[in-house]
Length: 341
Image 1 (cartoon, one colour):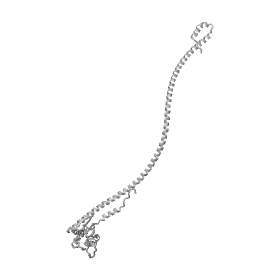
Image 2 (spheres, rainbow, N blue to C red; image 1 turned 90 degrees about the vertical axis):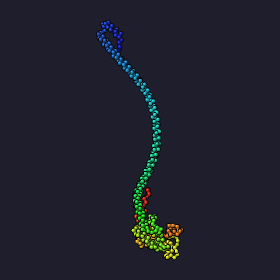
Image 3 (tube, rainbow, N blue to C red; image 1 turned 180 degrees about the vertical axis):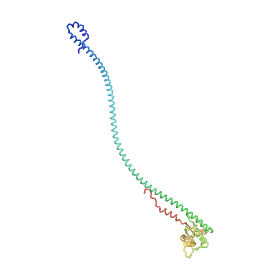
Image 4 (cartoon, rainbow, N blue to C red; image 1 turned 30 degrees about the horizontal axis):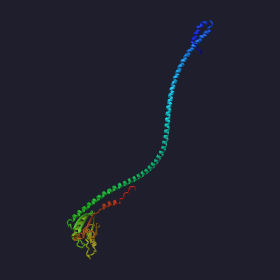
């Protein structure tokens, strides 16, 4: 589209009357229309110019903004590149560390596996030992139970034994008191009653019982034996042992029925046992024995000491059936098995 300058347009307008005669009205109208169209085109062009200018300014602004953005992006890219390179380096280091750790982990795992196997074996061994200990403990408990029961039984028997011993001691004390009372009228130098080893000893001198070398009891000795027999008849649970004793002086040759002091002590003991049984003591309770010169009470070095050794001892022992039964039950009780057997 062509554009006419204002000067040209004015010239045409001034020349219009002149040309009017030679230019037709149609042409004039065409020219006016063209002029109008040119004005409108100019206006449109100016609007387009302004629009283009605005668009150009906007584009310039956007371009400047894009350049700034590009610059920032380039800066960011550089920073990102640096960060990437650092990250990559760190990644490589971490990867290397991971590889090392993995290798170390494999070694540690192998070591741990070996340690685990050792621990497992040790645990199995300890479990076996624990089983053995538990078995031993059960056996020990069973043995302890048996020992406790046996101890209880022994304590019971001990109580019974203590009571039996106390009863026996009381019986011996009572027997001594009775015998002492029955023989109180006899001289203490001829007759003594004493306790020894839980027994009652009635010691009768030769002077009270026999003449020298004789086995026959004198009347005074018979009286003492009868009184003793009276007490023993009341004490039916008492055993009687008659022991004859001599000094070390040999008997005279030719003494009837005797060879030495053994015979003399035995015959004297037998004679006294016979007198006691004749006086009422049951024969099955009486034992006669001769001890000759071999159990002296004093050295045979003087007439007084020899006289002390020439004696007859009647040993009285309460029957201890209950005590013996307790002792027998103790000895027959099997010993508890030792632990673990």
